[in-house]
Amino acid sequence: MERLPIFAERLLLARRRRGLTQEALASQARLFKTDISKYERGLSMPTLPRLVRLAQALHASGDALLGLDDIECTFCGQACCTRREEATGSEEKSGACIGSA
Image 1 (cartoon, rainbow, N blue to C red):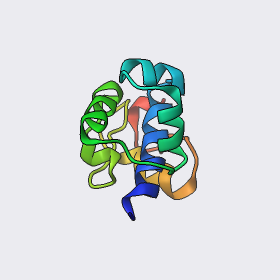
Image 2: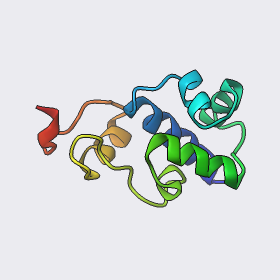
Image 3: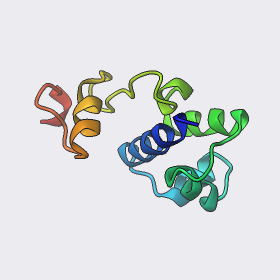
Image 4: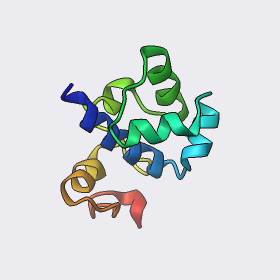
């Protein structure tokens, strides 16, 4: 299950970008906080219906959460910031993003 660590990282990144707590995301996706915690720690994967609800709550695609596509920047709609965040582990926006100013 090589997608498990990627999904865990992407879910955490997307949740933080939306400014949501695990509890808030769980509520919006009609899940339990413990589910979100397990997903973010890489202990389990959601079923397809749960993945769809998570993606909808995060305004992201299922492909982005699974690491098959880039997660768009909430400022500019581009993937400009995602690659920098994943490479550095930082939540700083890159200089290329006009919305970060």
